[in-house]
View 1 (cartoon, rainbow, N blue to C red):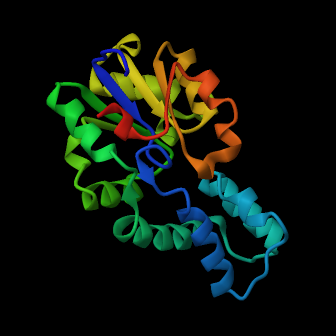
View 2: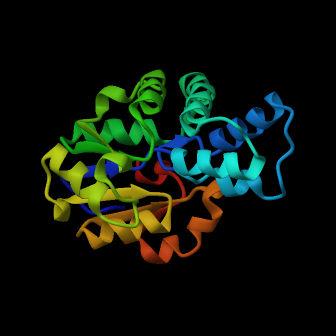
Length: 214
């Protein structure tokens, strides 16, 4: 069991959402649509990148004539359909959020996703209204290796970092949150296997499923 806390800050992809397959599917569909064959390791390399970084990588690696913003728009359109219609919550996630809300805990999201993608998937799964605030890594200006996005999220939900629990599926995020004075709970996610290495040891708490917390 976790200790009591006044604020909960959740990563979305791989933590609350069973969605880590989305960008791999988008990249594979993108290649098929254009009749392109990718070098070995291309999909694995590009999937975790930010969109502008990924666009530059795709253009240089595949020899494309597209502008980065054109690729980003195409990818986002493909991803939007999947997020809005197919992506589901991880087991127990919705119930746990509702339980926290019932206890008066303030709930925030700290995500690399844009509102264009996270709003439809959260609404489709019936949990959008449970959040008190949303914060993106882009707004924070630095990656989750730094505490910026979590500090911004804590400010938006009106809870001090020391009174917040951050839920993350990647070790980098856990370490970034801890640097900001947050308590952390690592969440198991098989798709994040590279970042799962050392996650359990780095986090203050660790769960395989939100069902453990119900």
